[in-house]
Image 1 (cartoon, rainbow, N blue to C red):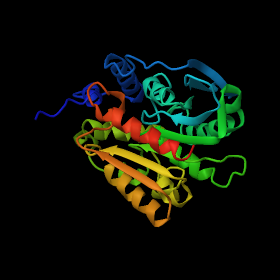
Image 2: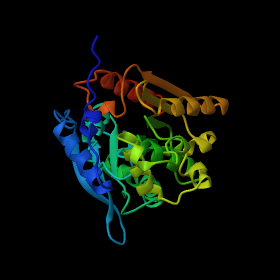
Image 3: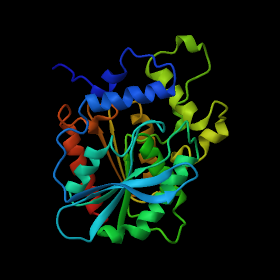
Length: 305
């Protein structure tokens, strides 16, 4: 059987962006062209750009995807992927609509992106957004006692890091988390020193992403910090659902995280989808496994909400 073509990889195939801004444009235009948000499911209501807080030169905001029916609804705070420098609530609108279709009030957060706002700006935004949603979700039909957090790729990294940091916050109670092909260990992502001219494709792009988020002068101590590599704070996680594709380079670290959670007696579900690449949830028309993955995640959330 022929292997299905990966729409996300096709966007980057044969491309050599000169800088992070060109890479951002390439990804965002490519996702639109690939139809990542085509045929949105029917939900109860959708609101865009709801203000959480004013910053010096920007606004921290969220889109809100409401289910059909009467609340109060269980709540999901969602942090989109995009390598810490790209992506937006718009790029992940269909995924969040899917969770709302299943009965969840979804807050799809527009956190700060690098390189304009490098670490810890995005991380701090995610902490603030979770606190805000916990305090205000009832105004939009949500039930704060049934609040979970999730994210994919870079957003999964921010989910894990922010939730671990909030473990001892008496004002926030997080029931469970979803880690969707999440970056949990930065030490496995950094491109080794060597001749940059020999680095091609996704390796060079990964280096550009990491440098934009953490800076070029990062050191091993920084990479091991739990707010960067949340695998080192696994003992602070609530019940966790982990998913990844077997064709995703993040599968190995996902499995290590799952083992750490079990060793800490934290409930953990893990699913590895055969042949699935990074970002496959965006393309359910190409990868029907995406529909199965959403169903498994909502079933998991329901156990804690």
